[in-house]
Amino acid sequence: MATVTLTDNRNGKKYEFEILSPSVGPDVIDIRSLYQTTGMFTYDPGFTSTASCSSNITYIDGEKGELRYRGYDISDLATKKTYLDTCHLLLTGKLPSKSELAAFDLEIRKRSFVHEGLKNLFYAFPDSAHPMAMMSSSVSALSAFHYEHLDIDQEEEFQVMARRIVAKIPTLAALSYRRSLGIPFIYPDIERSFTENFLYMMRAYPSAKTIIRDVEVKALDTIFTLHAEHEQNASTSTVRAVASTGAHPYAAISAGINALWGRAHGGANESVIAQLEMIGSVDNVDEFIKKAKDPDDDFRLMGFGHRVYKNFDPRARILKNLLDELKEDLGVDSELLEVAKKIEEVALTDEYFIKRKLYPNIDFYSGLILTALKIPKSLFTIIFVIGRSVGWITQWIELKHDKEMKIARPRQKYTGPVSKKI
Image 1 (cartoon, rainbow, N blue to C red):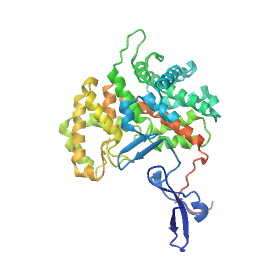
Image 2: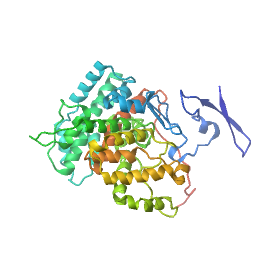
Image 3: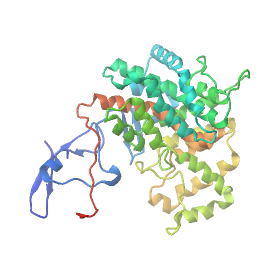
Image 4: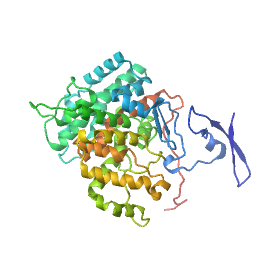
């Protein structure tokens, strides 16, 4: 048994802790008995060096720029499989056969409708409500319509619950968007595929023919796949924390949506496009690069760098290639694209960015593609929600199977007053 020794320099006491080895990736020190043994906690703001759980879903190597779902490289899944293939893989642990995919696809289509009573919730929101506010609220409300999922413990029940949320999230997303515009709601069309159906529910009008191009479906489906899972990020950790309390799974997903809304997380691609629009012209790029490098300037270049990846974000590589391949067919804004290309060129060659490993991340490219798909900035994070819903619910299921699962309860380093008297 491999161990690591901790020495307390105050009194010379030594403590040994077991080193655990994963199937791949860094070893971990088992410190579950740390407080009981030493009377001390670890101090790790942001949990940058803490593994909160064991998981067999997703693996990331930030130094190499690798991302794998259930062992499959993200580039293979994104270029050779569909989002529904990926959903089946995450939920069941294996890629579907042709017949299994057909059955899974049909089930998702049939479950895409929401209770008529749930639609009334959207009328309570003002037209000015942000779609993400409506999204988190409607998903939370979904737990009231499917309250039976509160106490489930069988795999079959888990799968029904999971497929229901994956199927209904795009419908709720479309309802949120259409309510923000004050336009009629559109029911799902079960003749259409998952991704095509979402675009249809966003764009369609009663009695009018709606054409969704294959190139649009391909682009958005790829984005869904790239967003499907990403290990223990802020929103996934939030889902797991809420799930550890025994809350309804859809309440846990709603909490994840709220965490994702933050601009430092899922809202980043919205910020990228806003910044590109603010820069406005290739002629202004050098000025903003200079501001980004100025330690006394608060300006931050959006879409570069990542908490985990210290190499090129593998998802960004895929979207960059997709953008190059489809930019003409999609009708990508040429001016925005030129500004983005100039920034990318500088960032990949400038010593300042190279030294700090500030490579373009997925948000830098996804916003350009979403803009070309005529999806407004206010809906960018909603797109993230649709893709990530399967990852969140897969993590929820894994947590429920984990025999070592405990309620999430970090400790703290207290810095307040010691004792006060009235």
